[in-house]
Length: 345
Image 1: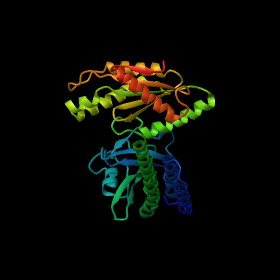
Image 2: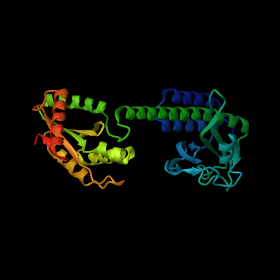
Image 3: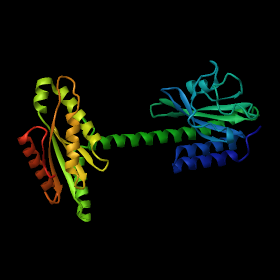
Image 4: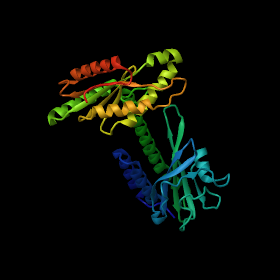
């Protein structure tokens, strides 16, 4: 078998275009696998992603496998064959080679059947500015026979491997940026202790909901809750007990409201629910009842919530007026008795 004239330049150019255009990683790796076949005369090629923590290879792109293509959900463990397993050598030693098919290769490595007598195995290696290297995956090309010029075939596979490594690293960096952005977004919009929306997020949601209700002429309810006696519990049993109560109440609130409602920590020992429509009183009663049934440890016993319920537009024409009215209703509830709900029925 010889390398196909002209195929090398065309395949590398096509691979470079795939990387430059971005898109779905699996599609890029499928194209690079096809390029490996075009450059070397391989009948099949598979690109695996490598998880260094678990030592797992997962097929992410392929060409020429047809019905024998591996499902992405079937991972391979590096070195599951004998000590001389070339897949393990490639990943651990960052060493490319062309080998004859033997029975002691990594179990289920794609390309071991269907007339494939040799395999080109290339680690996908990236390197940073300090010279530190990282294996991103593995390129495996199934060859119908040992090539006439193994060095040239291996050079072609290395070139495709470099492109595949760049594609994988780019995709992983992009995913890391997305996850970091999501983390910053969660931090900016959630309360770190309870995981509920924070006051800033609630204020924004309230403005949006009031604008919608104003356009549609529909009511909006706001229920403001306070944990009765939490300051005394924290002083007597410790701040950790108080924090645990806040988390338990927050979880109960989230489980007790409707999907359309917004739950937030309003500040200190106060929570708030934004409920489209006129069902604010019913929502508040459901929350108060659920919290009253909480089984608290650490000697805290049972706790109660007081609540003030108001409704737009009857109790306020804008967010500021509505929240002021909710605060007044909550104060009236607390002045009556623990566990009282005051305000709109």
